[in-house]
Length: 368
Image (cartoon, rainbow, N blue to C red; front, side):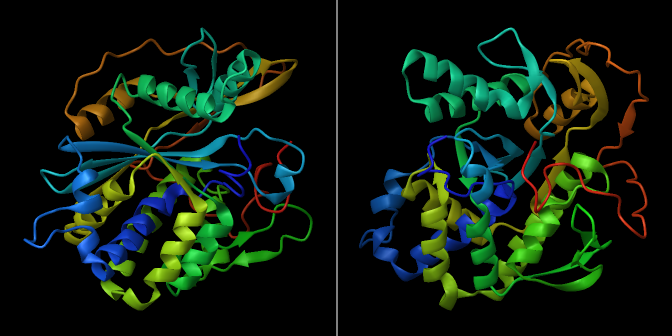
């Protein structure tokens, strides 16, 4: 991926939409002539960017790049994959999270792999053909997500970087949230990062919270990300923090990559002003974690529950998609018990008093 476009990109695309709405709402409020003509009708960027459909699907991607990993690699993975489906007519939004380790067929290939590896396949194919590697990686990722959704189109994408989110959350004064269990570092000392309880999360603590998956794995993390996204949107809207908007806008503009036009984001901002947070629904595609042999070692995959995949797509989009056969994984090198992880509608395991050691991609260590 091009370093200029995703200088610090990470997993926290979860709050991109709400903050983008806030920022461009400010542009609308401070510079209404940019969006409306003298007669009060939509004009300028807003008119040029008007959506031509009653429903828009935007995928929010958070890549696993940070400053340390950027020194040793040019290719990264979207470890947060969340679709925001915006229904303009009914004035509702649905958030759908796809676990990053979901075992799927990669678009344009006959290969099954983790869905967050789709970018890598497009990237390498383009590199061999002398084409734009980043663009090819994004296109393969989006086509793979569309196939997972049974052909539901993804119209736009948004990606945000880690340090940008820290700055934005700090600028809005943080987010009040009830943290259910303490969050600690991965290795050795178990240093406390975020204590449990109702508190004001600054940017850094907010980031620790949305990255943690020590309880409920990727399913628990995705569900918590959606919950805090909705709460952040609720608080930002309720505060009416217009005095802070110019700085927030500059941060978003610098740290967000998107194929949405300014006018389209302005339209989303106007929609956000009228959106009731109670009309935002959240869904995580559930499944089971299974080990499989790959390249001489055991790899953990998520095998999606096909029945629930079809049901969630029907519930959100009103479309019947075919039920697919559950893919069969190669057996693990050493037979180990399979771990069943509940979806967000099921009861998550009770948080331990001392959370277990975090997985290999968390906090102060590079991905292996």
